Image (cartoon, rainbow, N blue to C red; front, side):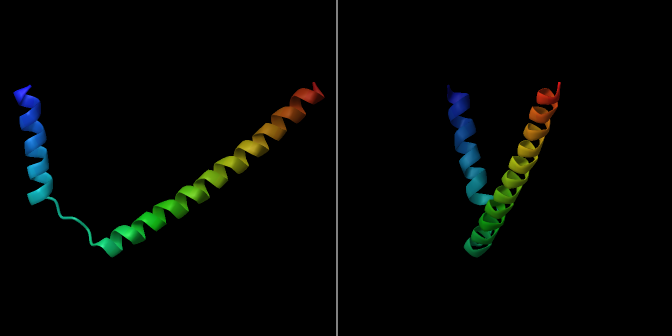
Length: 63
């Protein structure tokens, strides 16, 4: 158990002293960028899924 506690303590120390954190404005900009691309990607996947679903339905109704 002491090993886990030591690991967590050293991890927090690493985050506090050695990590360069981005500015708040950059964090906000990148968050918006990720959200926009996630929405675009999900809409693209939905579109492809819809097309494939209709193609498969048409194929099986044809057979």
